Image (cartoon, rainbow, N blue to C red; front, side):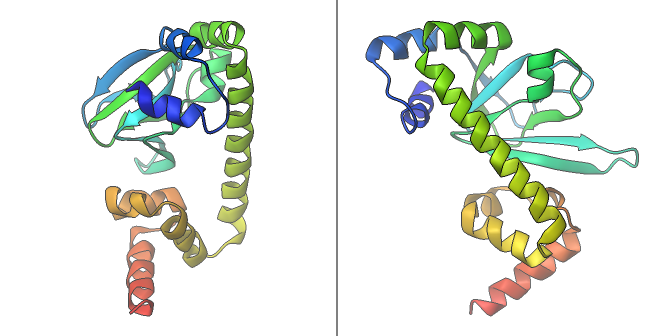
Length: 194
């Protein structure tokens, strides 16, 4: 479970064998069955979660019962309600497993201790949070300025694995358009590539 974490960490920082052993002590490994709810809207987010295997989704449900997906989290990615995790306020969305998954969980208290005891992890998380903020800003701007086709093509080019693993209606929700639009775009782009 930790191999993928260390592979991911070492893309940004260098770790000694001793630091790796210490890092392991701050995480709790967990196996989640498909549809297991890791965080429920209205609860306080207790963990920042690294996905070693599987796929999670973060979403909220509106007053009409429609699911709005804000993030898919495949292997090698992190998920959490960062506001809730760091502030202790209630979460505005839920996180659950779309597939049987293996994750590494870290509490806020352990997160703080980890960054003090392994200082290079503070740099890692700063880089992670910067990149996450940039991606969220780009996604927000894209949702206002890019056509549905351009948003679909972006996923197709940058996250083709999601197209295979995630049902069309959920991808459509994530991209901010209807399942019908998604189906039409998929058909038109597939026909255009023949």
